[in-house]
Length: 369
Image 1 (cartoon, rainbow, N blue to C red):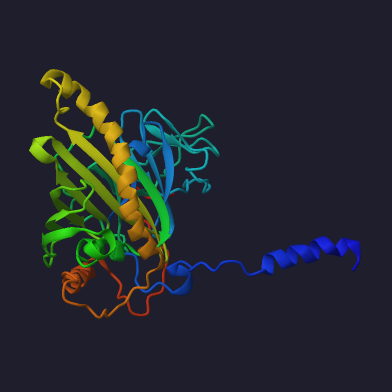
Image 2 (image 1 turned 45 degrees about the vertical axis):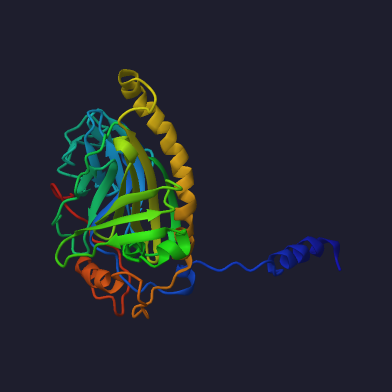
């Protein structure tokens, strides 16, 4: 063999040699079977979008630019500047209350209107395409609808302290939001996968309502060794919010699970934990109240790591799961069939013969030039 061929041959052999086989993600093996659902979807936890920050996030096959002005006004816009199409999330900046395009320094106010250019000339009649956005329960939600219709319902707000952020992680996996939210009604997996014992659980979706509640008591939750009660609030096909009251009125543990469709067969899963304490056990009330927040932040970080192990088991399932349209349900599964009927209200297109398409833009104020 000629010497100059040896490196090429070795490279070929290395690239084609069979190593350990790993199961492939579900979106690699199976074509997407369902369209993107309509509703509010979390694109960030609140502390990820600070004043002056510009952040780009994927949503339903497109991108959304999130930013917060100096006064704290939160906005979600289409990335492209209406001038010549520059991406506002790539070098764009917030100056006071305006977001400024990096290409020609066209500036847009919170209403999306172009208020100045980089040429010291009158601005054109141009505006940004905005998405409806809201901030609830320490989370930033953006509304998406297949037909571009405006929001039809609101996200319930929990009585939590917004000064304290979540400890959180984000994972990019194969999957669909409907399968993630189904976890709240898949009661059979709780003892089988997570080892919960003495489970007493009830609740089912109500037709026509966008928010559902499940209440449960079990042993083997994050409060190991204790029988704990918790409440799950299911918000559309986007969020499972869990609240666990601490013993003796010491506070509450909140766990948020957000599923957001990013592309056909792909989701970003945001998982956050927050412990809110009314005081510190064994410490005088005045000192305990002052120390409650820093102690709670430290413990939230620890609990996030603990909870990630249990949630990781679910991630493993979702990442390789094929959606079964007509499952062979067994006694003890929970109200999965009722949940799937309820989930149909969040779709505009039928699931049969689904072909993924780019979502339409949602205009909130003004029109592009």
